[in-house]
Image (cartoon, helix red, strand yellow):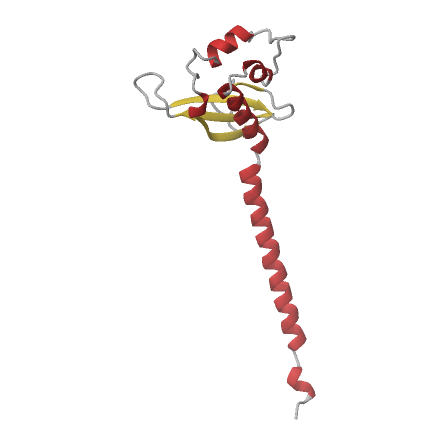
Length: 154
């Protein structure tokens, strides 16, 4: 015969299990959100650099130049299209944009420093070339990184 006291405390045990399950779920969600944020934090800037190298691979130099915030109508004062072609054109060290890949990214103030690497031999002595590009966060314009890395504290 089942008595009243046979089920005493069963509600407490269920409540404890629910609370444990809720806490573990919340911790898992916070960890997953942190990992996803870390992975995709610079996604837009990486995509812009990949778009730039895709345009170079197709030899669409004017649209690639436009990603630097420069157009034929409004060329950049300090980076004319002729200089851009010396740096990124078919006769440049970057003549094979398909060999470049994003090695790492680092958030730095109002932009992201994107390190692009190539396994192609550029100086006959080294087998890897790295360039640092700056991608502005707000308008996604590309440029050469003014610094080799972020200053401490950023």
